[in-house]
Image (cartoon, rainbow, N blue to C red; front, side):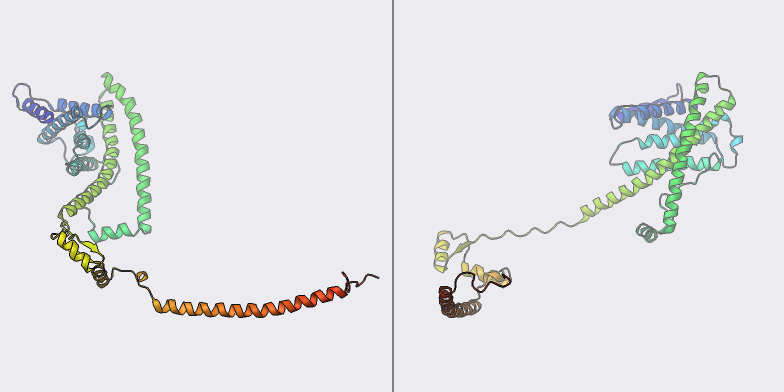
Length: 355
């Protein structure tokens, strides 16, 4: 609600005939709002921050329309032909994309990142036309490869993929160092520009350094946006498949039944509870046996048990006979041993090598 009121108030200010905003003022105010939002400690999703973001986007959009009407930039011109005061308007798409990315509407997240990507690519294309920095333009959002080729590239990582990944990593490292170097140079030049003592050459260097710094920022943002867009599209497909999936047919409720021991109990319980169906144990067993729901371990096997019993009895008889024979032999042996000990003293016959 506050966002709509704020944007409506700003549009009324733009449409009012009293003091129409000027192009430099719109750019400065939009740039200032971005710096404040980028450096604030407040939560990005707070209502006050989102209102300021909306206001900054409206200002920069109006500034972009004015710049387009004035036809400040052309592909047929060189960078040296562009006036110093006009260089800062090259940053309009980059600032618009950066502020758009700071919106936190979850329902419109895919639309937000796609809009921001279009702003970033527009800025990079313009910088490429003027040959401001050496870089490669990112591929289109749809991509040139077909779906089958894309799936093959994801499933198979050959030597060419490894080379491309290594080159991409080197490019990221190089951009990081360039960004740090540009930021260090910007901090030195900014002091002269803020003091108001900068001449045309220092001001031109200041704006060009800002543009080159934003080139590195936009390249990083486009890469992260491409990854996020892929994730968001997959999430949308999952949501659609979940909504389109037919609901499972509800199972009919099982009819209650009473387990009884015999048919007599079934008749008794049936007479007492006419609304409940009855079933005997045998009926329940037959029903589950037909459906194959009974384990084999529950079926006794009488033939096998009888055979095992006969074998056990035969083994016991053989053991008893063997024990009786062994008892007679051991008794005879012990008697002979006792007689021998009576006629021979202890140690007899064990005198070998005793001299």
